[in-house]
Image (cartoon, rainbow, N blue to C red):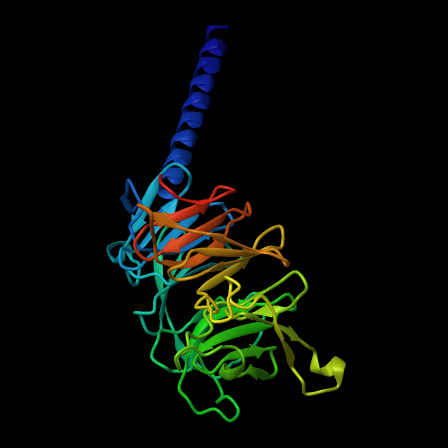
Length: 349
């Protein structure tokens, strides 16, 4: 009986020891699963882009202080010393496996890929493999009037050269990339207009037809989106109905409609071009201007939202809709703002 009791005591102790070891191992894995960065108490001042991933983690890309990760509790700053390829972040995207990608206009042919543990620098390979796969990620090439763009298929980062636009010879950059409801990829350029790639051919809407010139200048197509009716908006006061040439049996690609005019309703408005736009969960369109706040268009009326600090308008860069439908603003010098239902207020940790 004493022997049986001793065996039972031994097995019980072994069970608890094994259980404790398993718990310690799990805690270590959990602790080490996220790459270590610098703990921060607040965001930098020049936060240009906002992104929320599939795990509901927020990422804030800055002009010169790297990227910030915020899980609702801790704010962590990653820079080049942690493996990020550049401290300027112009674009943030996520693939189907949950990897996060960071691009910079200052880093030619390189993109950072983050798998929660480490940063890996992807180097682009010159390629002619223009394809349109649903799982591909598309990234802007660094500035320099190269007419290039990146396509990442999960294995290779393809550096693709655009064919020359018809009857256009100006060098150009890619300012924006947008995937439409049908899966086509749209590229907003400066200064040769908009290009749609459907996997087989390239269709162009020229600069003269997407920009109302002011003082002989052009802002470039920095934003592309579709409204609730499927019409396109290319950061200008017009909207565009885009057609399927096969269905129409015609070479006509689009019709341009005079729409809201200048955002403030004036014919000689300086608000005819905007930097960024998004459609909210109620199908309203939100437009970000550089110095004159945010404008919302519900299909009938336009509402203006001033964005100020110390009673002065601040300079804006981008607008973003998160997984919950909340709206965020990236700014040049004033951090991040979030819409509270009636106004945009500065976001603090």
